[in-house]
Length: 94
Image (cartoon, rainbow, N blue to C red):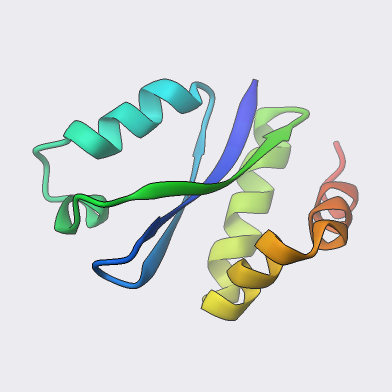
């Protein structure tokens, strides 16, 4: 399984977009990481979006697309409008 996920921090009022093949392990990493990564700056990250993809290539392409948008509004719209998610999966269909 391959996933694109989005975390949100109320403390920072920011979103974090990532890719993983094991979502539970990856979320645990963000919660317990002692590294100086982006997610280290807050301790209130909540999973607000996850998308199961057909393969790694599709997941990485969708993650890159979301990151290139550089827009909170775009992410918030992804959460509200499921047709956007469907279009993304179609656009990056393997």
